[in-house]
Amino acid sequence: MRPRRFPWFSYLLVAVGAVLMVLPFADMVLTSFKQPGEFGKLPYQFLPNSLDTSNYTDAFKQLDMPTLFRNSTLMTVVCVFSVLLTSSMGGYALAKLRFKGRAVLFRFVLATMMFPPFLFLIPNFLILSHWPGAGGNDFLGRDGYGGLMTTYAALFMPFLVSGFGIFLMRQFIVSIPDEMLEAARIDGAGEVRIWWNIVVPQTKPALITLGLLTFVNVWNEYIWTLLISTVNPDLMTLPVGIYLLESHLDPVRTQPLVMAGLVISTLPVLIVFLLFQKYYIRGMMLSGMK
Image (cartoon, rainbow, N blue to C red; front, side):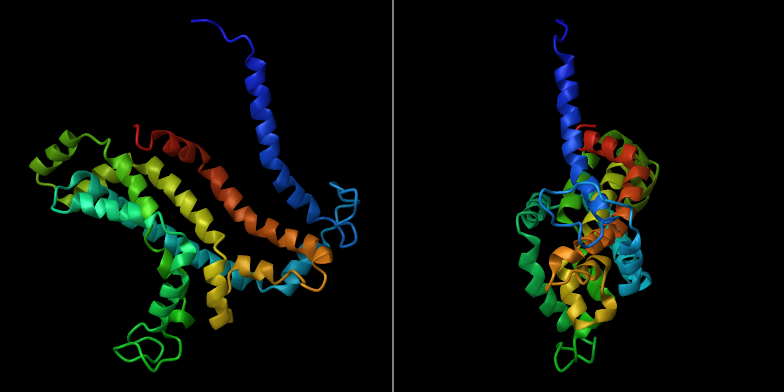
């Protein structure tokens, strides 16, 4: 095999890409320490004149951070648990169980990935608003005062199942040898026990990868939670609260305050990713080609 003549070019390319990826995050962190008059100057000033932490204290003063973190955490934990459970069970059924209509069902799951999420805003709103027996509704979903839209269930119900998650787990579970599952069936194990004792341990990297992706998407969800917050302000999450920090009369002066809120919101995502980074990389490498 011929040795590579210019290995430094690959390293340089990776280094430039890394800098371009880190630069927006570094700018966000540095801007959060700027004073209102420092942002928006021309030429652009990348570094702050001094590390001013007043933006962080102001963010905690203007927002009810404990409530926002509680709502965001509750929504994220419930959605991640539900997506992992349904995706693992659905992926196992589509990969290893033989039943009539399996191919059609799998194509239907793939079809759900083709629609943009905002397309379901109005249907989800109407379904939850007219949920039978909730919020004063009758068994036909009428005559109520909001249905489930005023409850915590409205935060996570549209995100409990993921078509992408089922597809990802199905592609990973297909690579598990059928002989191993057949041996367990011969020994008397049922499908639930096979799924829990054999499939789940072998798909841990894919589950962690899916959990991280779901965590990031749900934690940063903004449009649906903004709609929920207009019905019940007590259900406001962290992204919606950070949006309230920006003043529409003078958005330039409030940008450092908004950036401080974004740093606070990004820290949990960064910590979770660093803790499970190796599993995430392994899951992305092994999904579909174990």
